[in-house]
Length: 330
Image 1 (cartoon, one colour):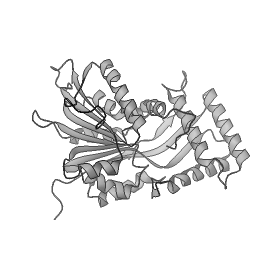
Image 2: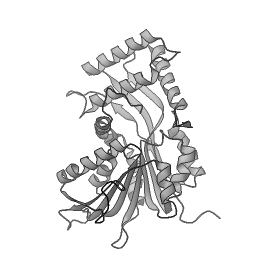
Image 3: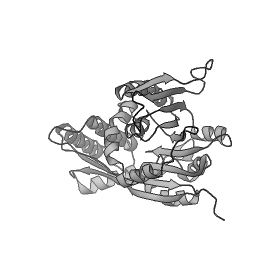
Image 4: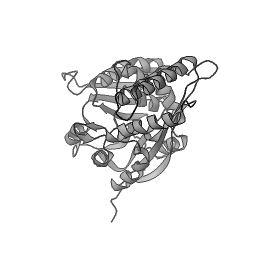
């Protein structure tokens, strides 16, 4: 998402959690839970999340009681997001009956490698209770992290939530696989795939033009001179996974669908929609192929629909689950 100064990025990430929860493909999620390696007393499960943002996926897997003994490493290039995650997680954990304590070795700097927190359940007698989950949060570029850790450690599970459509997958995915344990899983969720829809229609030709130009900005996006994501990243992920040595074991759509019910938009999703409109405005402001006045009028009408609760937003996305073979093919 292109950031706009008019909206808080941490609040945007928090606002979309309820939407993400209902959008995740249930069959892919179920397959993920079935194939998730089991921890033992001597060997906790090791998870690495890239592009972790403010930590909503950490909360999600704990809410679903997927982790008993685990080390969950969460990284993001944005230091502000990781800082928000570090401040947010203790309060969230307390609300869910989890005890939180620092897990950093004595004498180490609190900012040496971000934050380390240990979570435990107050009801450890339950069979699926959180017995000992260590969460490691670090603000670091993905390539620098992989370069540092490759050859030192591997992870059983890699998570990339709403992330792989923002990077050059062809180069990023092999880096990720290089730190994945044999037989490990890569769970990529909410990868954008080529459809941005606003309803009701205003002017069909203008609606289509704005969508096409918006997707074009995704395809042309560069960060530090390198290609960054694309509007059809979801469908292309099948080939990228296979090229990186992963077998695709589950896939399905995970579309965002936002609309107002009798009580308005759910949770904080009106704010989320405002962020989407503002992002689109930022991406297309001054575009040479788009009439400035018509675009400004289009935005004004969409914002009026948001205010009166008639705006519907749909984005097509895909969830994929990949697995690295335990033995390389002969």
